[in-house]
Image (cartoon, rainbow, N blue to C red):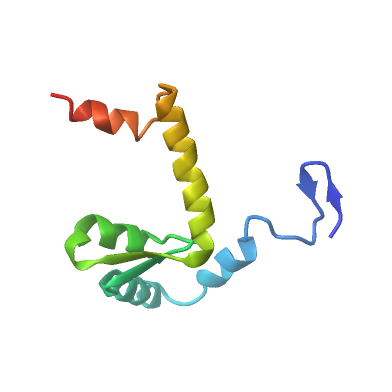
Length: 107
């Protein structure tokens, strides 16, 4: 696979358009059934590759009944991300979603 600066060769699919198109095959009813089944699943596995609307909804609405698991493959990236946030906070850097949430609960 040849690379040209920031662009990749035409035969690659960096945005996974083929996978996206494949997921849209079938009927709307089949898609709704799949999403409902995913929503009802008591375990959401977080791996950094995909996070579906059904998974986000399940965690948001059924948090007490959902067990979220972080995959082993995602742990190094999560640790690096956490380290970056903690380093920024120790320097006093504002991080939207981290500092904003803490400001909301000050009063």
